[in-house]
Image (spheres, one colour):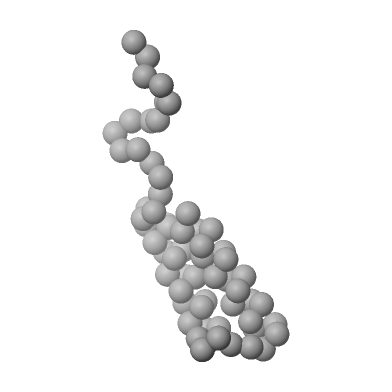
Length: 61
């Protein structure tokens, strides 16, 4: 999930760089935010895994 948000932030930073505008935050700050989100994703923060066992949907009896 964080990787998707980072891709969106990178896309916004790229578009702002192309058209030369800013919204009060620099392109460098947006790139740093995207890198921070990617680092959190790589560290395992925000992943949707179930600890202890694999999710199988319905329990078998």
